[in-house]
Length: 361
Image (cartoon, rainbow, N blue to C red; front, side, top):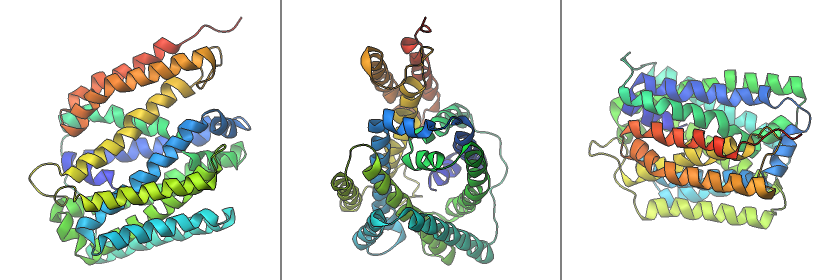
């Protein structure tokens, strides 16, 4: 819900397109790719370590973002970070039915914020502009990340596992093509506002307050469902999930305590907070999609995952690909020399050749 703000700032309206289209299509496609009965459950079991890592990183990332957000957007940053994270942790004890109810409440709250925003601030979209050259190199990375990350998201896997084939296609198509699309449209509106007014000035307006409520409830729910899933993925218990929650709170506190740079929107380059945010995003643009590409997608002999000799070879190939590509991604995404993203992505894509195998006789 925030990456479009940075992309709009850096690339204009085309930055939003590069975010929204791969995001909706990539997530919605999951309902059409996982067609066989029990496929989602097998993915959770076979790749339990990677799924847990995805959930844990997501929890810590969201909590870090709270600590960063409240620095410039709201008073009482420590209290805000603790309150949001504690409220999310309370979801851990709720039933699935309650979680479904909360999902509806969260979406309706965000929809109400969208309506209130439009009523108060109107619709001021960005001016059309030619596609910036840098976005041409960044867009393939967006497609790569948004197309593959969903298969490690335990909340997506739970949704896929709970439906039959027809229901899965319907739910993912409507969920991401309609309900999620409305939220994506909201990011376009407030991204344009922040680009026009600056982050600090936007946060002081009524429209900015509605944006903060929208982002806040989304963060609370996201952390809550991932904490719950972290406790349910093989054999990790609730004690470990509580540790993950504590780690997330610590990350939020660190973001405030170290005062990671100046507020967003300053003209003096990237703040420390934004650098940290972009490093977190590298998990979703490089580390996790590379795992799906190299280790999760079955080779021709049907092997997938990290089991056996073939699995060890895949793990080494994945680690090597991420290690080689990481400096290139840093140059492209942090230093903003986007052309470096192309060889970085090619390294990951070509590593697949190192793990291919012949069909079993």
